[in-house]
Image (tube, rainbow, N blue to C red; front, side, top):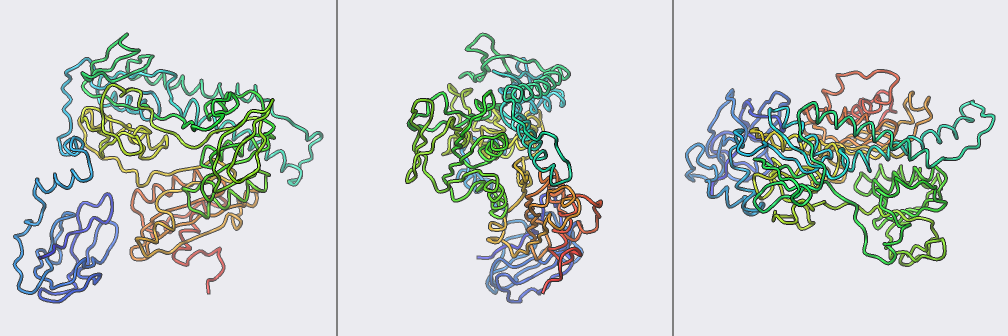
Length: 581
């Protein structure tokens, strides 16, 4: 059987490549992995390796030809073997459909191949959005920007979990923690405090958080009004005839397309004592107006780690119970190790590989049960073991779900019903607010007639602990499985701005493919990590190679110079690192 050679897609934006030269002639034998031709794109020159062993039967294009990506440019097979006519190797429509059926529900596969929806309105609205969180309110605004008549239904306050009970409220608490760290460091920086005693006023802390949230939710309400989006207050559900019901039929919205952005809700474990009023979710902890003397946190992920450090700084004795072998275990291990070291230095106890078996109330205390451990005494327990999709809007409407209970979607965010979209946490792809922004945009654009796919490969993640942690792309471990890599690294301890600011913990790590110098991943632990990572996202999204990055100088002294030096270290060009042996 003859095998085709195709013009590779060497980047997400690459549409065509030019053949520089063939490195083998027709009739020559080739081996798997052997370079057989050289191509050039607008980004890089590269050699194309053979994916099969055999004889080069035919070159369909020659030097100087510009060929679209994934086009057949040659054939490899056995000597004398006949080959299909040029282009004849493309899978038939039937074969394409069979492949899609293997990986997608039939209705999703069908929706993916259909033309983008037309904009002629049939109902009262072009788009109805259920849920006013990051995916929902962004989808509503984007659809309105494209000329759509839009309605949005929100059962609580616009802004969703992120703004009301997640990203923003926790950052107000963490800023308070940062102020406390600054006070503690003042003496060693030459600032003498007359009276260095302080305490945290929790009611005031809660009030400040609420004021910040109120200002931002008010801003979203203004945006809805400015774009002419009709806001319905109540619980939105999809009826069997594909309408949106508000509060069990008090009002009904007839829209051509529905964007379901119900978000997520905390997972509550089914264990002894979980119903105690002192066993809290993250939503409830943010309204707690007393400072726990002893706080046990079940779950050492992002939520548990951020709350743990904040309340430790406030004065609580914090213990984190983690089922895995380390906290922040979805991140590159080198990053979580730095945070773990800092936590332990601050007196936070971390119990890993632990099984939480519930709590028992004893007078005004909680006894926290951990398998194989002595009971831990606590005043409050925070359950931070993750979140699950909020699918209350589709209780009466059947949409296909994944094994983990999320809604299945295609690259345009369409569900198994092509008129219903599910961006954000409800699909479980990437439960981050900024990922929800992008998914919401793409869902709205497709609903209004566009057809641009969602690409989450360069979506960054961040943890706002001290030091901050941020990452984009592949970890070192994952990249090593599929690429020949080199790791560049530079420490904040060698950076002038970091040393001057007393923020020298951490480093930047860059993962580079050695063949093309492609940036596969960037991982940061240190000051302003959540800001610096955005530069790395831009580098990866625009497909700059490491060599390109080194042409752009960074201001001095800045934290971001550490990123530059880590890129330079990939090529052994970091001038502020010692000479490598």
